[in-house]
Length: 239
Image (cartoon, rainbow, N blue to C red; front, side, top):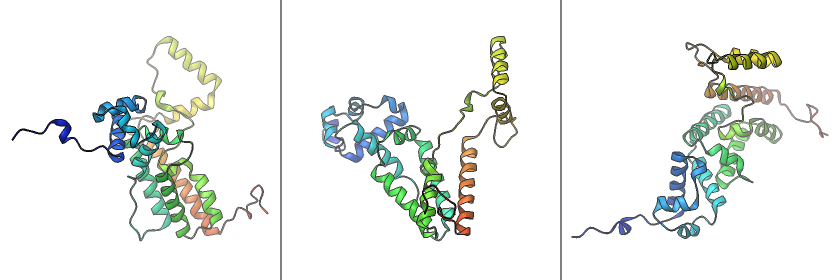
């Protein structure tokens, strides 16, 4: 029996297949490489065939975000709110580390996508089921910010904090920088750990992320135990 032509064996095009291919393309080549034409080439179809499933580039990006967020693990029941939140946030971080472009795309959306809304709703539920008031939950969500989705914007990028190569101009520039901003220089020097440090030569992103996450969760736990309210704390606009 003659083999079927390649087109006959190709899986039918649907929204899920389009989104999977888009995620894979962004993973391999970066989000900047993604276009409807390039995606159509990857799928072996004409660009117009995509628009039945994703009407435009923005909806394609929304769908890609939802594909990534849907892969965040849901912790099994029977654990306290703090453990549930921590494990889910770290699961979100693992998902975003597998898809390095995702944080940038999430931040570019004009509003949360359906999967993000569902995820945030479940995180609010974790606080509320843990006994948090609506008031404290509201402030907890603000404090957690993008960490809920596994990423945070860092104040400093210390990727360039390696020791100078020794060139005269570079050494002079480094000395001038340190003289003008001594406290930044002090902090940068303190972050340049030796190779035996558990943190590494410079700041370890995962360590710093978990450090901040635990600070926030520990603080929220103390506020919850105290029965904290924004009105009692004298929040602006409180009555």
